[in-house]
Image 1: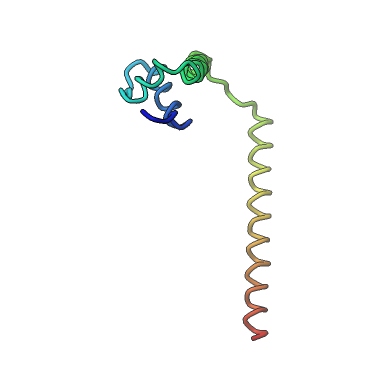
Image 2: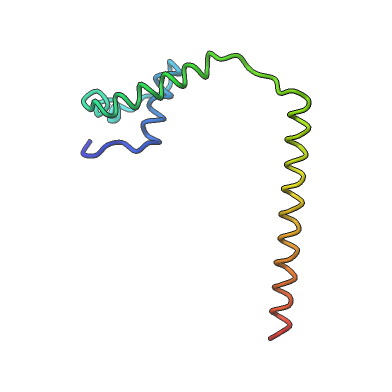
Length: 97
């Protein structure tokens, strides 16, 4: 491999190592085994992924869920208002011609 793998390639490789059974790229593996910089990056990714897999699932509190849903509704309302203004502006431009 004449270049360093892209970040997404290293992430996919690290996921394969952490998942114990995923498909591993021989090409990426060859590069990682010879490149100290990529080895360190993959090791950090693999450690993070293993920690995430071992962490217990967390159940959000009812207050958090309510706040999240309210924030999503507000964002949707703002987007709809913005689209409405854009549509009106487009109609006004069309009429001005």
